[in-house]
Image 1 (cartoon, helix red, strand yellow):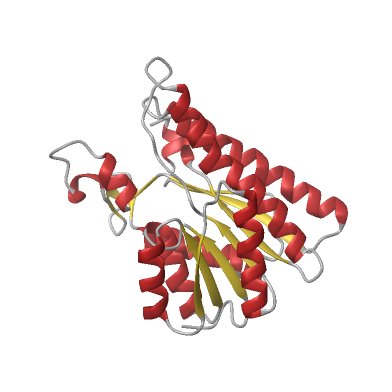
Image 2 (cartoon, one colour):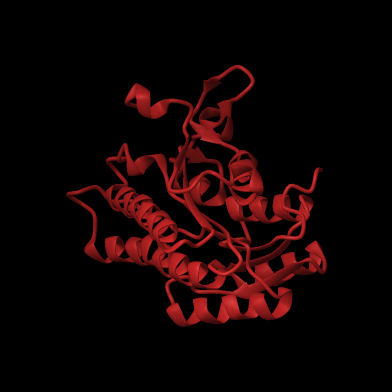
Length: 254
């Protein structure tokens, strides 16, 4: 490894599993000190014990403004500063425009969208003096809605808009804070696996990157590599951008 985020301090929400877990591991491997938060306290504490002293776990309900305040304060107390925030935590609930329940839609907005609003707001406040990078996890469905996941698609479209608004705010205020979003297609995580129909195997949905064929799901490690790029100084001229990770699916209209 090359130390691409050497000495930086990062906070990754939803870091106990899936994409968040891979982001935590990769940032640590590349030299960062990493705080990660999750609602799953047992898994988070076990993982922190395994990852060593440069890792820190904090229980975190991302829909709670009070929790956000406490988490960022805990990170600053432990590591002294916050340089990178990865708004990764999210949920997936099914429901099309006819069958979707209002309660589910509100929950999707609360976890997927309101958490990003709070995170960006508090992350900007923590970073504006010394600079930093905020990475928001969106979805290709923010452009190309998935019929059976109407509420999820809407929640991620709002994340894209919030990202642009936050980036513009930082630029106009003269803050050295960059804000970008990543828009993956399917990611083979526990959340995705739980939503697959009976009989659909990993091999059926996973994309064969070497031959550019097969399914539309990618391993979470590939998305973590994109987060690393946006967290590092390599992306210092990039802010307000929407990084699609869909292998041209959007262009094909699929």
